[in-house]
Image (cartoon, rainbow, N blue to C red; front, side, top):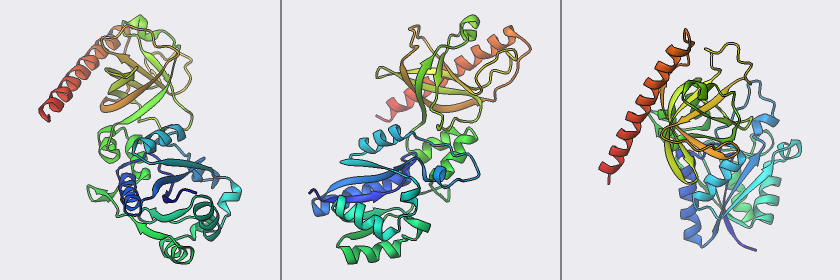
Amino acid sequence: MDRFAVTVGVFDGVHRGHHAILDLLRAEAERLNLKTAVVSFDPHPDLVLGKAEPVWLLTTVEERKALLGASGVDEVRILNFDADLRQTPPEAFVRRILVEEMGCRVLVVGPGFSLGKGRAGTAKVLRGLGEELGFDFKQAEPVSVRGRQISSTWIREVVGRGEVELAAELLGRPYSLAGLVTTGSGRGTGLGYPTANLELPAIKLPPKPGVYAGSVRIDGAERPAAVNVGVRPTFFDDPGKGLIVEAFILDFEADVTGEEIEIDMLERLRDEKRFSGKEELIRQIAKDVERVRRIMEARTAARRADG
């Protein structure tokens, strides 16, 4: 059986704080000639624990696995977080899953981490289990920005306020929305700005409604886009389907309906608002598109200057 350096957690967002854990995991694995593994959970424990507030996630389980894999982890194991797992004492979880099933030789966790029934598996408990069961225990240092420790909860708050630039600072990459392009109402085409309408996974956290500068990844290429998140209030007679995410991709004419695309949300331009009519709306969209073009040109110039 392979031997592993293991870390455990939800890892929603796979943000900069998580990367500090992954860096320590890789360092310990290299020190002891081990493979690396992340043990995560689906659904999110808060869904099973019945939290009063709705649970929105920064990453779907597929996105989480892809980001963890891209970080260089050898294995990502997703456990079904059900009522039985919820009631598993930390000793049983560590012994059965981490040691017996995975050959854990080093357990790496983040600051404030605990696991098992009643969150009884604190750092002190886990360190003691390591001494008993024969694995090392390491705890990563917290990563702070602007005097506050980075966490998935904080990033959800930031995205919910539409502060996508701060979200990118905390994540270490832009906050993105990925999904299938579906057939829209044709409103954008009628205005001269045809949009790709994105169908988000139900659990995915959308940014605060408004207009954003974004970058759309299609077939490996990145293209600037003006992205609207909201309910299109000017067309009050549009039955709609609740919150809509639609992107006007600059200098792009191909039909991408039925394709999977990903949008990096780069900068918030303005609130969504209701206009007096079609002509006023068209003028505002033209201004939004021009702002997006300037923002993307400035970003391109900055990247070139950085080398």
